[in-house]
Length: 252
Image 1 (cartoon, rainbow, N blue to C red):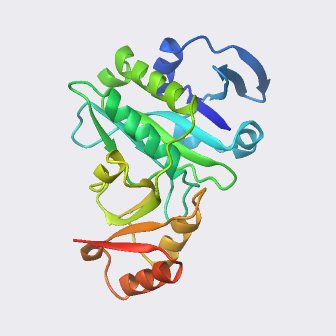
Image 2 (image 1 turned 90 degrees about the vertical axis):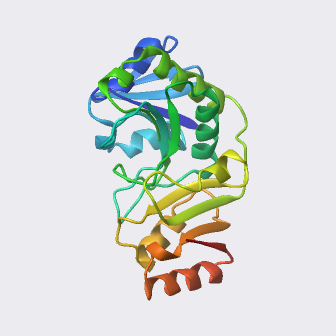
Image 3 (image 1 turned 30 degrees about the vertical axis):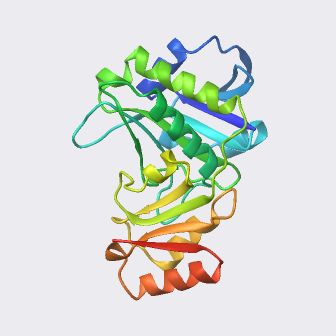
């Protein structure tokens, strides 16, 4: 079901390889190594997580890809993050139950000085055959090489992939900040969030429709920040969502 992506161009991925249980080599395909993390296939490639483009290999091994990655930010602080990738206006397939389960587990495992955050959909790769989820440690070289911090990722991935996923009503967010302000709803278990269309992208009906349709399960609720989504786009988006049978929660 799951496939893990380890990127040798990424310092958190390299630390993950150092602290994780032994991952025996199964085979090589071109420049890729196929290994095993417990019962989960692992694809090891030489580039950066955002550069991975061989979706065919992922699809041959599993349906839901989890990328191990570093997190960077303008004002760095120790932080565990999750998000669905997507280089707007296209995006990857989102798995709201997986990314939200990882988020809840990360927040339970976070320790001082680390916080945890649910990020908006951003950066490649864009997938169509498999879902994609990033789980990250930030936000400087110190944290990227912190063995205890990356061991937290190891434990979270092992825990979430080793059991049945928690399943809450699938939701999407439109017009929020990059660090999602409604993530408490995930921690409370009210919803499982997939795509988050941040306020800084050009929010059009087409963009929202693309993100809405690229989920592994039907979206039931959308949080829409009306101040950040201007008319006439806002009216078109609300009409489309309500016409699709979705509960629209207007914020702001």
